[in-house]
Length: 261
Ligand SMILES: Nc1ncnc2c1ncn2[C@@H]1O[C@H](COP(=O)(O)OP(=O)(O)O)[C@@H](O)[C@H]1O
Ligand SMILES: [Mg+2]
Image 1 (cartoon, rainbow, N blue to C red):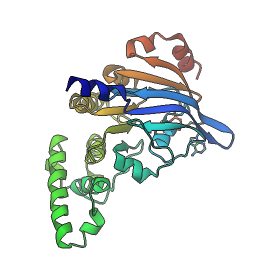
Image 2: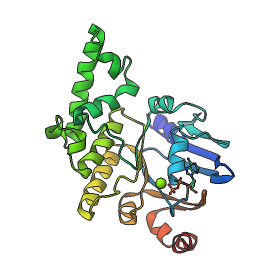
Image 3: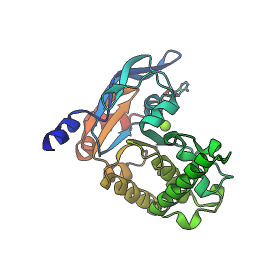
């Protein structure tokens, strides 16, 4: 048993090897390498335009790599389609909430469960017996996830009608519905008040306590420093620092990159 655990620990849950992403001459990511251990909160920080969102898009297969490779649990995933990467267990929330505002809170989570079910939500609507059973299962699971995120009382509300903090909670709940191995969060505290941001911090820490691996892109340094196990600092698409929050705050190159912007 002990041996199995140590073997599992030897493989990073996610590893980037010298990845490059280009947009017409601009290198948004340039030979970037890093590795992420399971069960940690790793934050990607850096000035505007550093390449943070591009990195999330590269991990999720939205942008192709021009060089290098990305490994998930030791296996290359570069070249896979976004839905294939989601099905492997890498899901994300978006900088701009991408909820279906005219669907209910519950329906938004049910849609999110699609990647890991065999027949899927839309086919489930056709109501073949096996699919009806699956839809009931998805509904039950979705309700239980809403419970975990404190949203059960709002299950029947339109997503467009709940407050911003609840919308962000819902987006994370939806991403978690697929039981991902890695949860990617793109600026989950954007637009939140300081109190709401603290609640978001507790929510993210709560997920980590259950063993969730989280990659966080966030502007708010107060939140980042409070909840991250590790930081990766990007500047012009390259890594200029990596380490514990306390060490990064003292890193001269990092300080200059932020002051110089
Ligand atoms: N789809 C795109 N097409 C062209 N350039 C892009 C695209 N996405 C990002 N970029 C450029 O890549 C660089 C990194 O952008 P981005 O990853 O959005 O930075 P960050 O999220 O760190 O603010 C920027 O110079 C940006 O203008
Ligand atoms: Mg961004």
